[in-house]
Length: 387
Ligand code: NAD
Ligand code: MG
Image (cartoon, rainbow, N blue to C red):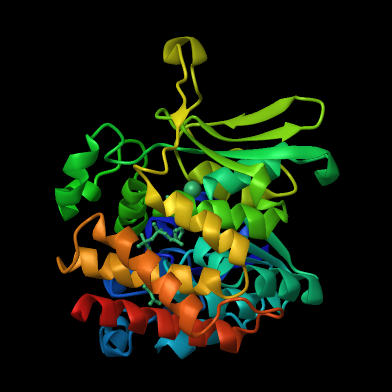
């Protein structure tokens, strides 16, 4: 039996992971599940999967979780520290599916077992890519990408020499506003930004898809995970979301990965790797689909993409600043304190300010520096909003 732990089990990626594991209970021994405010669901999952431990990230939810699991034999804990401590319990496979920079430390701690980290939490790579990859190498751990585009690139690279790669193309659905006139974007509402045309995901990543901040993060994620030069990485709008990524080789060939827009494919790939196991996703009927479309990912419509180019060029702490500023700007948009296009303006402004006042380049990235920069950037967004 494989020991597994899921960070963020109550989220969209977490639920899909639970789904796959619950379908084969004889194969998995669930060590820990962690969630946030939805402790009723966390308790249900812990009982159904017979987990040893259930952790809510929020201290004020401890009593509720404790009550929901009374008599079940499942251990209970609460708080950010307890979430990270859950990573110290040995497991063969960890799913990192917390949303935001909060996913970084648990993932780093999990790497110390030298086993497998299935990484949905792209913020880990954006904020601290070089540190995360160095820690994985140090402990002999394997990181498997779970973001659909990066899982697709990973699969297209099996058996290939990375030196023969000329370009990596990740696709973008274009999000909720891909067909909106540019002038209308300024007044886009929270409800409009929270409806994705193709994928069913958590609210934050759905809004990030509409603003293309998600794709911006994924460009950086590609650079950090695969170690390819930023000039080799492209994004293209592909409204059907059936091709997830393509890898171009020096002989001109392109390897594309296709699949239905269902995260269980990428999660299942990481769960069964290096084997291919059965995954219950829809099978594509190409004749029925008929045609696939592609459009330029326009940096005028999507300023986040241009900002990502700057971040990749600066490197160092700029990813940590970028991610934290983006998270804080997104919080402000959700709270109604900032307009839709205001998010990119604030992120740009904060990055420029931190670059000028603090300098964001640095040779060796440490967790302390990353966390300090994260804090500075969030504060800078608050200051910018107050002005
Ligand atoms: P979600 O909002 O649906 O779920 C997030 C999970 O994290 C929940 O279990 C929540 O309780 C927990 N959580 C929230 N705040 C926390 C905190 N401060 N500390 C600890 N736990 C906390 O998010 P999601 O859409 O499942 O996304 C999870 C991650 O996967 C994100 O990094 C996202 O970018 C990435 N991702 C998601 C999808 C998708 O289809 N949803 C696709 C690709 C990548
Ligand atoms: Mg993705």
